[in-house]
Length: 123
Length: 502
Image (tube, rainbow over the protein chains, first blue to last red):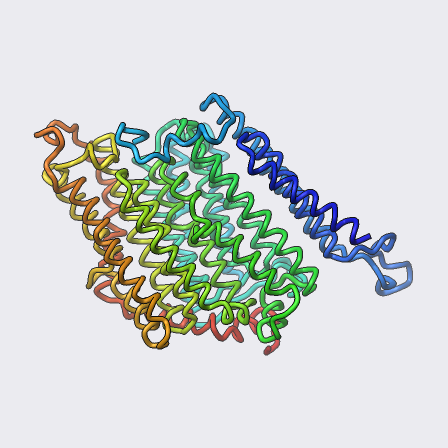
């Protein structure tokens, strides 16, 4: 089971990174989203996969019967998903605004402030 | 008493909420954020004094004992950094009274700044790695919005680079945290230190350490991961750029120093040559980039990168003197660099430009401003008796003392010289040389008295700080040395969190 997850995580990272090296900022944001999901799935995988063993304490017992799934990675992922959701929502608004101001979604067009300007540039 | 640790978090949060409640009343928001900044500085000062007297403080949020709950810890290093952050927050809050356009304030400048301070203070005080990730994100999302606020083309271009690179760093950080949990089964920093600090470096631990180094390295803008910084910092309003340059990269450096001295100490010692190489390259590339620039804000942004190299050098040398020197350097560079940025903001406000080729002759028009800029610039270059001299002396001394790090010492001294060159160039071009159009400075409209003092007083406060640290370095130096000893021998830290001696 772990190996399947490992391959999926690898594919998510590879796709995400590939999209991020493209020039279109729309693809960059999609790449970021995939990278975030890859990281979440990675935490899930390295936190041990134990199927069908919820960490509940049975009635009458003081502790759950081992082996149980570790709930902490899931809590971490949940937090990371919420944060990622907020950040990606902001990124989407940002690229819309960038597209409207710059008039292009090509990162190579977004270099006006990087030049060592003698024509005034941005000042 | 240890509930004191919550204050630097509660104060910015409460101030942000109060600012949001006063959404319609911009002048009320200004007053609230100023009061919040004063209280944050007071709380931070009390925290620092308490830590000095009582040793490392820790508190378990919600009473869940470590390593299961979230721990807040303040040792001397983090208390000092919170104190510096509080000071910067206040200085910039005063400056922002004059510098912030009504447009930004209407879009929520004041609450965002408070959320940024919340994230910064949280990052300094947390004792849990995942919690550190959350504080980083709090800080980042506030900084994203602050950078993009206003929506000018230059800001949009800067923001897209800043956002993408920082999100990559966050994804790496998150992956590193996840893998570390899979290996160690805990994310409490003191608990991790107990398990990993002395153990044999093997298996996935070095890989995890490298992931952390890359993630924090991007945020701290070390070579070769610095390029987003000079591409974005100069586009924001001046108060925002100042607080970014003062605190955000330093949070990255703080995290590097904290994680690597506390948890990955074995790796740090083994990688010493590589870390020193990175430090040297960061210094050189930063200063060379600065020398090539002709625009004040971009020039200063490259100097941020260059100065980060000195901090990494302190981490790489790994002696008490070097680490103490790095902490001293951090305080010095925050004050000196911020003074330069604030003075540049005044130049921009006066002349409407920061292009060196269009500036000139400002000395005649604004002698006070020229003097403030010069003192801060000389402090950054490390001219005695200003603060930069002692900071660099400590680093160079510890490099020579160790006996086999002459190369990095030579690089540090050479970069100091180039910094001096770059600083004199900027000062001569903006203030000293004749105006491009003769007599152009005479026709500049003067700033109104109120605006001038709101901008000049914060700048002067920071400049005075560098002079004061320079003339009377002993108290700060002793504090930094104590902080460095705590970092290198973290028994007190681990005891404060876990209640057991390692």
